[in-house]
Length: 231
Image 1 (tube, rainbow, N blue to C red):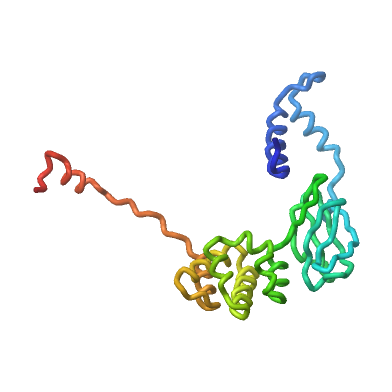
Image 2: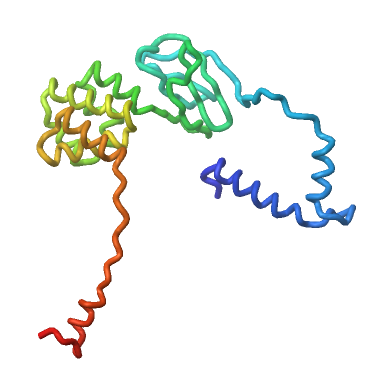
């Protein structure tokens, strides 16, 4: 069963290239030699890359979501709610575009007959900053680790808004996973502030643990050996 089409395509390409060594069923020479001859006769590729995609104009709902391919919904940004936007659709991605033509977010494209809802964490955070009271019923709350979720559940509304702002800012600066881990560590230390979470996020994003040093344990082995000199 294929679960990742792009990874499978890479594997399939490698397998096809290995098959080039096989002799052609009719001409009796390796397929790679025949392909080399064909390639010599091909026209030059254009200098500008060709983008394999299509564009669609869609109308977002009150939450900034839009619909593609029948039953699949994707988020744009809360500021685009109830407006018409242009979406770039490729074989594997769905990208709502800003007026400058830059992607607001890149979603993995969904397929099938069942409804799906694909939401970018950053757009959810932007919406929650406007309405922190929606935190308990949000999809974001479900993906936050239990310890951090419980701590944020107990916060008063102003403190919850501040915690969501920290998560939003750190997700924009680094990524969502780094932001959540930094906030969780800050909460465990009892100091979930913007300054503490920012320092921890920077450390998580840039710190690389040093390689373990090789330690010669031979002297200790000699001491523990029944015939050793240690008393």
